[in-house]
Picture: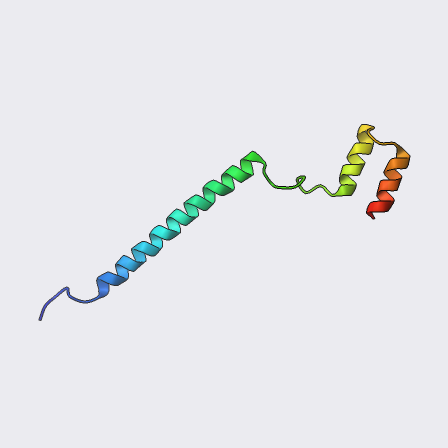
Length: 76
């Protein structure tokens, strides 16, 4: 009878490959997430709605009250 000739080694090797893939996948995901988080590349206008933008423009004096009211009617 020969000892150590079972297929148990293949299970450990498969588990090692899966662990390695999980490690590198999570590492790459963490790097991409960190870069996108800290560079502020959220896409679009950062979640501001068109009405929020119109309010900000009105508050800065870029548009008149009539223009703001017209935009508000159009957007709602």
